[in-house]
Length: 228
Image (cartoon, rainbow, N blue to C red; front, side, top):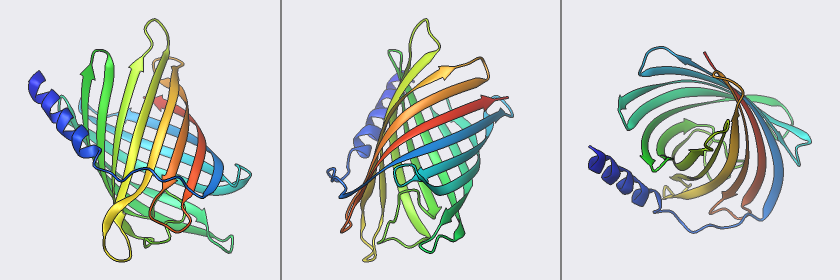
């Protein structure tokens, strides 16, 4: 079983790295995101999750959007989990009017423990309004594939964990060509307050691709998580 798990993870890693080279955005912004996450374990294999997120844009001086997400995940195998959910997004349009968008997603998440390092690969398919800002070549209701590779490790003898990830977005443009349309790089730390509560702080570098004026984001994210 261990050999099969390793082969499965290696195949997923090779598939993940078939992406376009990184291109730096011409327009830059510093944002702050505040997140609240709640988890409820229904059974040994089934979990429910809710998230509330607030984003501030334009050097964190202006309201950007509010996101509310509900989802569930189920362990299929020791190393494979399926998850899905829906998201409601409240954001401002060009006339500074509040508008509502929706998004659904389906995830397949593979995990592997390598000498104390927790490796995971999440393959997501989503349909709806997207998270990257102003994807001018995509419709507001777009089908997008996202792949995220993550590594995490607990600092022995402490309440701290560190983690890092790289994520790619893939979708169709106005000419119906499937291409890489964004990348996100992230690194952070997590502190366990007790058995049920955790605080995390992470930094995100996010880039757009294949647009005339690509956007690059620098984001500081603070998250509080509670499990019950």
